[in-house]
Length: 258
Image 1 (cartoon, rainbow, N blue to C red):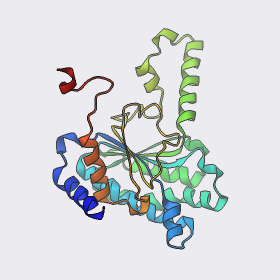
Image 2: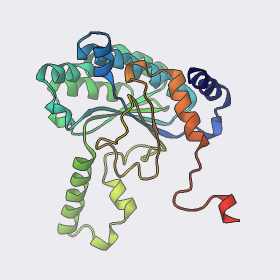
Image 3: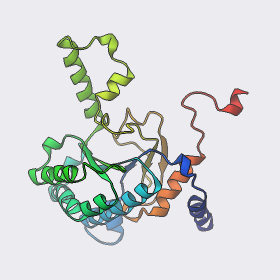
């Protein structure tokens, strides 16, 4: 098994097609707590190490030519976690951006955040909006954090916004198509709104209320690697798997069409 894994990683390194790098990759960063537990450490130690992984994967994705990297950092359901853990997670963006913004600027990466940011603590909001402001002129990859984000809430908010426009006479119900609805979502301002590749770490195989509309035709890759251990090679392997897929979008490929 291990020899096959090594071969797969070597294949990813040697055979990635630079013309088929997914424009938008989304990642559900899972496994921080289990990583810490395996080492007899508190859960927050896993989150701290996971922050270092974010730095590594951001730079690797940018170097590979990814245009948008969306990371599921904190969900609308994560408030249910123990108060001390939530407090640590809310403080992470402050530590993260304080140390990483200079590297983001050096790598021409622009920060974006989607979610219900008005519900975040003031210090977290300040760290987030400062990072957005400091990187706004960067023209490379967009590092998009989903922070206090939930897809069902996002869809509900979009429906409410469109219903308000209809009520005010600004929009006819018949005008609401997929394009109009997509433009009401939190991903509307991204250069590529819909991920081509969704990765989830830690062995869990579920979506967990993440980008439910946007991933309608995304390729899904699940890996047993815990997020703090997720490496450049693991990202390349996930992209390699993506590049081997036959993406038909409900149609037929050329061989089936003949």
